[in-house]
Image (cartoon, rainbow, N blue to C red):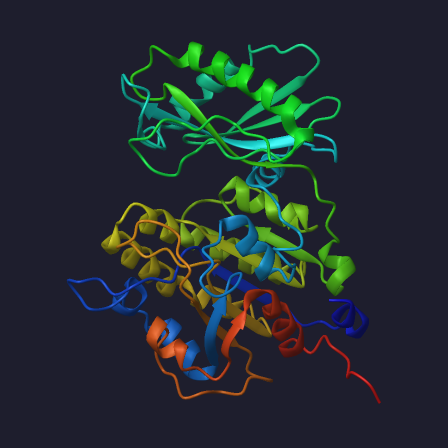
Length: 402
């Protein structure tokens, strides 16, 4: 990235990066096609016929990524060298301040049976109306020598920031990621984390006591313990004034962490998001606009193949709005694959489309889907190199060498 930074030049080109969360999939037995391939996408197919396609590997071959490292890679950061827990992303997403010595962690309300085994990792995706008062109850937990800030995120999600001396983020998650098992105990990854684990055990025991008599959200799990990593900003790395349009806090958080401006009052409907994106570019507020659509991933995780198809078709119906913003480059991809038949993130490559009329080398693909993109002209690349191509196609890189 030192090489890229040394080659940066500025101009007036505009870039849109549309991240369709969990877009990649596997063929469904009933159709023989992935959700993306089965969906009717005439407008994305037109962009495909005018652009270049390929695949991205979020991290590396065979590695299933979380949303945090997958997005870091899309933004050109080395997600292995700069490992970031989900906690800092959630905290930044809801506007909390986290110093380098604080420990932020993402919390989930979950449902356990009478034996303490998890029967629903997300407590039925309880509503904000139910979850917010529960977060207020958890704020009553007091631990000597530690300040604890809690904030509701959305549905079953909340974030906690522990502030005190000698706190460590080297703690294993308590979410087993499966049902019919008890929440895990927090365990230290090294000796320096022992004190932090003692504090967390105290807090978890107190939370369990408060929630014990509830039928739905009667327990919590914690994941993504993290400090503030102090990443270089987008403007410093790439000379880009970058903005983010995302409805879900975690994605705002990672954008804020890399120095993007967060566009406020973002609706959850695709049409609303795309209209807002056009307004941002029309008003010349940004050089690089990151747009995040979450629902494809949610449907994939819920095993909802037809729901994922529906969201993809909604994106296709409205993507002309983004074209009308007259960007120089449009990138359409995902952060990772979430096949509905697996109901989880996966390691499979993610379809990639780059539309850049002035610079793109058009390949032979006419359809935007996993099988067609696998043979596209861009080939298969690691996601951390996507920013190189974006900068090149927007003509923001000088020649290297004499």
